[in-house]
Length: 267
Image (cartoon, rainbow, N blue to C red; front, side, top):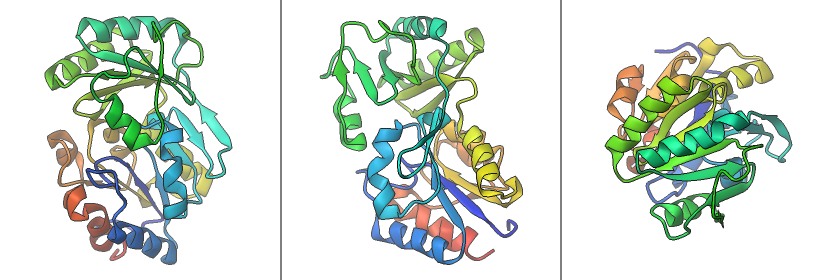
């Protein structure tokens, strides 16, 4: 069992929401129970911060949100607290390496999502999940300033893994992690979910030992390494489940709520 938890930081997709991107009634009840128990609750995601905005009201969020895997941190009233952009000279090399592995490349410049083809795989999926669509451009890396995230996209998960290894080896100025088996998120080196843990502990005045985190994918490992209690979803990738101190049920079986009831509110 963990010490008394002061903060629970949750991933969104594959964790907080179901596979069809819903907040279940039991999840909403669990968040309310955290609030009643005096436990801070916050969310972080590989999503753009704009794609998390619709979650603020139903979750009654009062803590900062970490979007773009920590590339941007905002308040619930949309004051930008931090933004970490990719070094301009690295954007085109990132895109070139993604294309070399036959991954499509998406570029995010703040709230602007750039794609080459609106009909490409997963564009509709991401539009549904985030609540806004992309802007189609001839070249996603035509402008390299102000880029917060580049995403490599492919149904070939082995190619996604290979691209992640290459980027990690060849471009140490970036952080490359998978937010879904078919997405490779590339951000500035300091833009990780682990950084979100560091920011929130300072902002809220809590110890890292008293922080619990919950997630399901490779991009959650950096926050697992910084928390007193790391909880993996039952649908989480094998490396995430191995790194966790506890494993809950799947996101379609109210795994988030079960984790709150079993591992947070009983400590």
